[in-house]
Length: 107
Image (cartoon, rainbow, N blue to C red; front, side, top):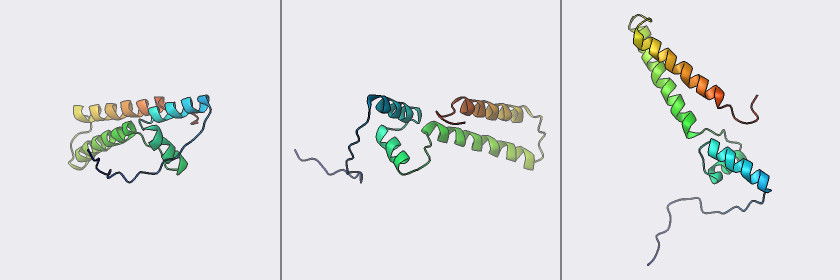
């Protein structure tokens, strides 16, 4: 049976030697960012900002909530409406989660 060539353009292999402690730290950082070790090392090596999938989800949630608040504001609806209060509570909960997840080494 013949295998089809992969459409994945990532075909170059890089071998990296590390101490067991460094490997554990890299594995933990990749896991925390919800990335594979390869994706994590490529992002770090190319000085790309590491944005985890959870962070992207949180950003989308905040955008959705902000859109709701903007709709209320521009349509003259009262800001004490229960949906607005819930939206603010939602944003506070998201930001609290992000602050609690502060990456290692961040100040």
